[in-house]
Length: 210
Image (tube, rainbow, N blue to C red; front, side, top):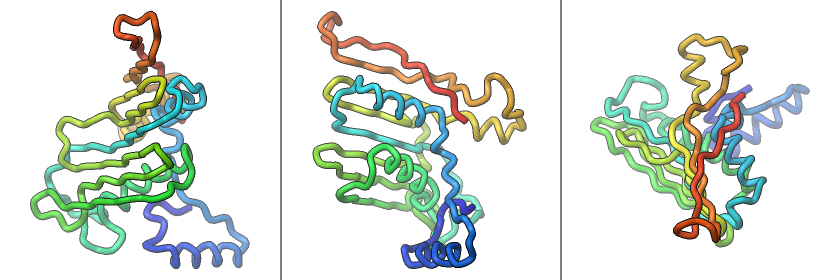
C-alpha cells in the first residue's frame, strides 16, 4: 500500500508494478478520499441525473496556512508541493467520476513568503464541452466551495471538508453511530416552472463517509 505521491514519474510507477507482479504481491495506492461524505454525495447526485448534462465542475481544497512548515511536503525536493500532495486526491476523484480527460492544463505557484514548493495550483481538465477545474491554495482564509457542479438542469454546491480526518485526529472511535456524518449539507438548485425565478433551491442531504 503506497500513499501519495505514488512515484515521481511514469517510469518509476511501471517499475514498481513490474516488481510487484514478479513477486506475486498486490500493489495498491491509498486513495481514502474516495470515501469522503461529500464525494459520495456528488457521485449519488450525478447518478440521479438531476443536474442534466454537466458543463462545469469545480473541486477545491482551500486552506489558510500562511506559515511554511519544516516537513516533507513543503520542502523543495522532488515530489513535494501541493500538486503532488492534494492534487493526487482531486485527480483521483475526477477520474473516478469522469474517466480520463482529453487534455489538462496546469498552473503552479509559490505564493507564501519563503515557500520552497508550490502552495497553489489551478488545473483545467477538458472533457468535450465540459470543463473540470481542480484548485488548491494555502492562502485561502475564506475558502470557496469544496464542490461546485453546474449543468443544463441546475447546480450543486457544498462547503467544508469531510469530517473523518479531523475525527481520527481527535481520537473519536470510528464505530460510533454518527461516524462519517457531514453536518454541512450541500445546496441543490434546479430548474422548475413553479419556482419564483424559474428555479427551486433546497438542501441536499449528505451521504455518510466511510
